[in-house]
Image (cartoon, rainbow, N blue to C red; front, side, top):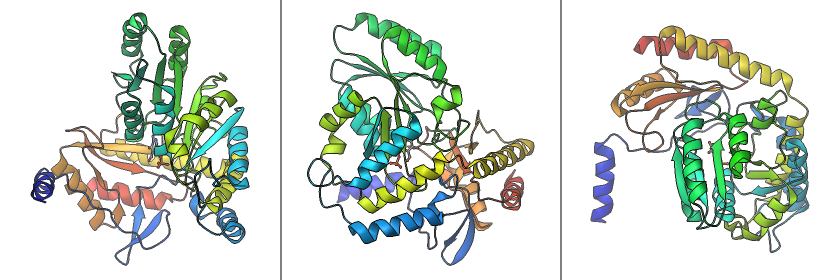
Length: 386
Ligand SMILES: Cc1ncc(COP(=O)(O)O)c(C=O)c1O
């Protein structure tokens, strides 16, 4: 207990203590906190599908048919027809042979990387990859080489050194497609070329890309016009799809191997079948194009991005609806976060360990459901603290 108290007080003394804020309404551009309405610029529900009536209806029909809990893990009695259908629909949406659903995107990343990479493998990971990729690489026991953010030359030099000296095992290059805290996009074409040159697998995390980038929202490969069938495409249903659960799409052999080896898939009770039923509907909606909502999302993104730039903020190389405003130290991030909160704008400070020290920020995410007036209110509040 003494150790716990000390650890907590150390966290507090560094301004790094965090507590979840409780929301009393549904998710959306406006949320209710402590009985008050806030503009929400902290959601990954990019297309506002979490409230889509057809998805809610599908979830309710699923509840009526299956009840709630799934009762077992996928390899026991926990695979339902809704899981199977969802996997077929994801494969068709991502244009792959097959797909596999995990309970979360976090479980997908830890499960996939651990299942593929063994002790004599080398995992090459972008320094800003999501925590679930970092944890998957750690779990795998592989030699992990971190390359500088989006730095192809650095990656190539690491591949050169490691692959030449490698006796057995393989190489796995892994990257977020859209980086979750910086909002920039990985150079996937160059990564594909390096993977081919060094005979290394490439895995992309399309968590913030699915439904958001690519002409019809299919994610990173569509965005860059990449056709390769060898790429492992991980994603999540919890962001633009407005549902819950993770997935991987790829060829059938990959999926068969993961079913037999991915520990987070094998040793965990499966997603409630009604949740999978809701996701089937969400993927169908994404597959239909959703042009209007996606256009609105990108227009909103432009307004927020240009507005922040005009005020003079550093927004790094953001290219997507994730727009960081760099503020530096924790105290300053907390000050700006509180100022926004006092103006009924929810966009909390992002601090270590989510980002590295000195790189604290306010991370704005815009969605299709925001109005220009909402965005202008956030910009007005940001102007006041400049
Ligand atoms: C890049 C990235 N990968 C994976 C995940 C994990 O997905 P999930 O929230 O479904 O666990 C997230 C988000 O939390 C993410 O931002």
